Amino acid sequence: MYEKWIEHHENGNPLIRINRDGKLFEPSFLYRVVSKDEYKQIHQRGYIEPSPFYNRIHASSEPQCRYGDIVLQIKYVESDGWVAKWGDELYAVTDRKIPFNRIERVSQCR
Image (cartoon, rainbow, N blue to C red):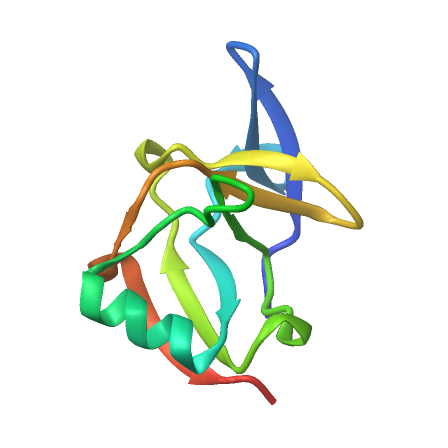
C-alpha cells in the first residue's frame, strides 16, 4: 500500500526516491501526523510551517500515528525542498512552508 523509500544522493543532496525495477522515481505522497489543534492552525494559516524547535517539517512514507490523531497525505513536490534524513527510519524533512493545497487527503489515525 505504501511506497518503500530509498535514499539517493544527487548533487550532494540526500533525496528520497522509490526503486521500481532498478529505476528511481519520486514518491507520490508524504505523510505527516498532527494533533487536532495543529491541523486547525495549518488550515487557518493556509500552510504547514516548520516546527520552531527543529526548524523543519518531518514527514514519512506511511502514517506514524504515535505522533497525533490526524493524518495529512501531502503531495510530494521536490521543489518544496524535501530531503532524506535517517532516524529509526528514512524520513523526509524540509525547512520550507508547505501550502495547504498540497494536502491531498486528511483522515483519522486508526
